[in-house]
Amino acid sequence: MKYLKNLTVFALAVLFIASCDDSYKVAESGLEYKFYVQNEGDNPNVGDFITLDMFYGTDDTVLFDSKNIPGGLTFPLDSSYFAGDLFEGIMMMSRGDSASFRMSADSFYLIVARAPELPPFITPGSIMTFEVKLHDFVNSEQKAIEDAEALEAKRLEAEVEYAAYIEANNITVEPLESGLIFIEEKKGSGANPKAEDMVSVNLTVKLLDGTQIFSTNDRGEPFEYQYGQSFDTKGLEEGVGMLRKGGKATLIVPQHIAYGAEAKGQMIPAYSTIIYEVELVSMRSKEAFDKERLAQQAQQQAIEDQRKNAEKSDRDNYLQANGITVAPTASGLYYIETEKGTGEQATVGKTVNVHYTGRLLDGTVFDSSVERGEPFSFRLGVGQVIKGWDEAIAMMNTGGKATLVIPSEIGYKSQDKGTIPPYSTLVFDVELISVEDAQ
Image (cartoon, rainbow, N blue to C red; front, top):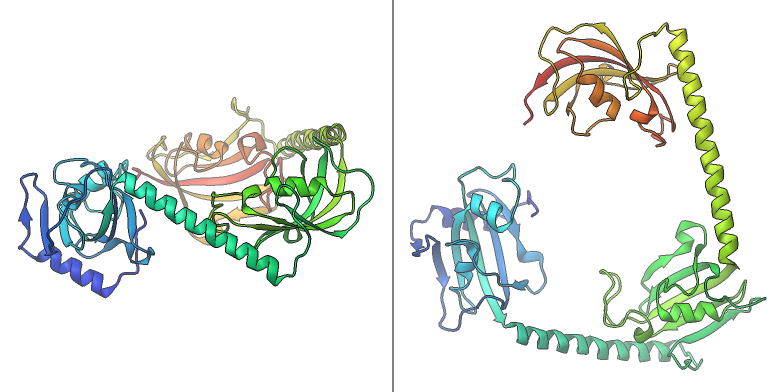
């Protein structure tokens, strides 16, 4: 649940008054409640879909406010998680009621929200206040009917928009049997794609109102996929199958061969007609594609093997040139103690504060807490740093200094970190400043 820092004066004022007011009543369950408006009428039951406005928080901080949710917050009403919880309070309300409820913050977060622990902004034992206005509620059967009616209204609206688009754009091309309107912009040559061919297409996807959903123009290269594998919509698949290499077309794909009643995120509403501008750039057999992919993988593996061999050779030269004769640990770490520490030992789970300077084997400094004038802090042994660091710092006592030679296998491996190329052995001069209990 999002912690809101931007608070409204009104919300804080109401919350403060509610938390300080002693006019709350106490139910047998222990729930503290107060009604501002209380009407006669039915109460919601478990499983009903309720629509309400709500904000809640502690004495001086609003943690959630539904005011920006169009139409209010709607959700199915759960049964009570414990005696005296918020859901018990909501089941006391009728349509149009406004009320305030107070409950333990510990219970709300640990039991209702099922958080593993209290958030840092919640004081243990504190009280939370919930301000609720209940607009409406319906049972699950009524909700299903309302949803179906709303969906049907969207479908009818989409049909009207489709017809208006066809008329406004003077489209006279007859739909195919499927409903697809295929408007050829440029004839291609050769054969049409067949199942399992790899097709490379330039593609722009739009809605009827011109909203662009996707375009290969933005990525600067065509998109390749296996034809016949339900890549996107039935309409697109049918349209691509009518193209030849070099051919271009505009496809008007009505909702029943697009996504139908399914909305696609927030960009594509239910029952949307999709407009595709598509060009078949090239196609090739699946066998040719697989052969090229295997060749690329082999080439990449050869490059990685070469880099690994070069790393080992460069590291051996560095060790010899710098007179480093210590044996590596089982992981490959070279730990060269330069000053023995006399303070507390760094152990797994502790927070350690370390000064360091990191270099590549050629002496290039890529990072230094010494230059920044601020030690680096992390929790030891929990994967917050590279493996070589977790292993090495655990060998140190406060006040100790060491040089670490860390092979890429326990460093950044094949990752390209900008100033640190793939398969780089790293050299660190480190000093353990202090060891603390984790917060």
